[in-house]
Each structure stands twice: as structure tokens, then as C-alpha cells.
Image (cartoon, rainbow, N blue to C red; front, top):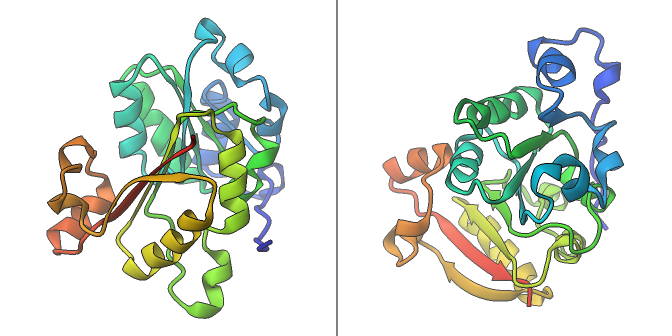
Length: 229
């Protein structure tokens, strides 16, 4: 079991900035801080997405600036969409981008992904997206990498049967690390490539902000899709 740094509670921030203010006030119907998130465990469909509680609910872990989050939400109005992010600025940017596209069927959550079992009940979530997480390239920091055996067990448990987990990274060393753990996990590997943009899947893949930078520099994107069966 890896350890991780506890996040600062929003209520304990001495000088809240405009993003924290938006989280707690202006956008509080669409963005939840860490004190509110666990209260919806097992009730995301009936309470948060009550307008259509038969929604599939997808999750993006680490939305960054929210371009993929907004794109996915707009492309799939028939699915609920949740984003998980710790940093205040990208959290607010993500939900604002989605709302600017009239995508009201999505929410942002401030919570640590490694404690995801506190957020969702078993088989409550459908597809999961993890794009360009911090690679923690130094060996002594490998314990901080998101993809770990215990984390994959947690994600597998909260997903519905038939749903997928999508992972992208520009770091080949991280991809190798992750693949070793994916292969030992309960998932079935559905597709993998060490160069997404030279593969048959490129036309089905949204080009994220980070991806555009990497591709412009000729850096291959490593990709894998896993299925819960």
C-alpha cells in the first residue's frame, strides 16, 4: 500500500483565492469540495444526476485544464460525467469549460484519487479516463505514481462490468511500469500501443492540450485501454 500526502482542506486555506470562492459559492452546484464528496457515495445517480438516474456515469481522474473533460461531456450528453482534480484552478477551469458548452450533466470533485473507495460504491462508475498523470521519473518517487496494484483494485471494484479504463502517457518508462501492473490486474487488456498517433485508434482519440505539445515535438504517446469483464 503506497502512502500519499494528505490534501489541505478547503476550509483551512487561510486566504481563499477566486477559484476557492467559485468552488464554495458560484459553482457549488457543479463543483464539490472534499468535505461534500463522500456524502454522495452510492447515490451519485439518484441525487446528483436525478434528472436521468439511469445515466451511465464516466470519470476522468486528473482533468488538468479541462479540454478533454469539456469535449467528452459535450460529445456524450446521454452520460453523466465526473472529473476528479485536487488543484483549485484546473478544477474550476474544467467545469467552466463544460458549462460554457451547455454541458450541465457533469460535475467536478476535489478529492484524492487514491482514496476513491470513499467516493464511490462498488460498480457505481462506468468508463474511467487517466490522461498524462505525473510520471514521477525518479526511482525514489515511484511510490507516488498513481498506477499501483492497490489503486487498480479500487478502480476495478467501482466500475461496472463491460466498462473500460483508458490510460495515456508520454513517458515510456512510466508506461512500462504501468503495463506490468495492468497485466497483473483483474482487467483484460483490450488495446495497447506505444505510438497512439501512428495507430488505428488515432481517429477515435481526442487530442488533449498536453498531447498537442508532445506530438508537435515528435514525442510518441503511449496508450492502453483495459476492460472489466
